[in-house]
Image 1 (tube, rainbow, N blue to C red):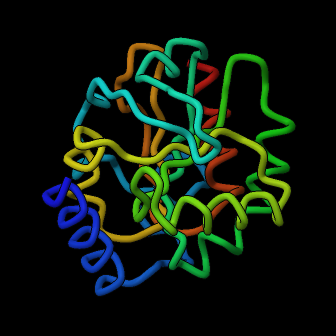
Image 2: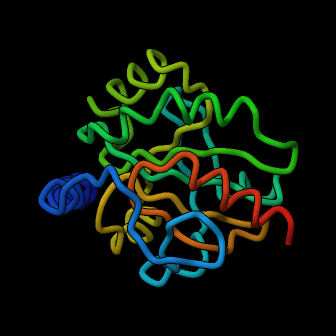
Length: 183
């Protein structure tokens, strides 16, 4: 447990020191979204069993339910992350049937103050989509995330696909999702 708290604290410090990023990382692709290839993230989301911020148990099987999952990695300390929550709530409510939005609260651990903070942030923003707390496997998965928010796309097999978007760019998330759903 102490190792887990240390790891979460260290991850939080790294993300704070690297700073939140409110603009998408720019790499021009053949579509209008400014994105970066998901080179620093593992190719597959690891097996995990964790809790949502509302206390439900969730596993990596959550990805099998949809063709594409938009995984938004965010922190309760990050103003751009909090600022995009209302738009993410709108996006989640208007998603096609074969897609879903999932939040991953990078600075939270089960029963931590950050879980309560994340719950308050999402409720106030009308962002009722699933938000999960990282377990040990997800902490390792996030080790190469350099800034939040970072959004990646995961297929039904748990594979990271498409382009990673660094920074608050809800329109970019929508564009990348639409592109991936067409494939």
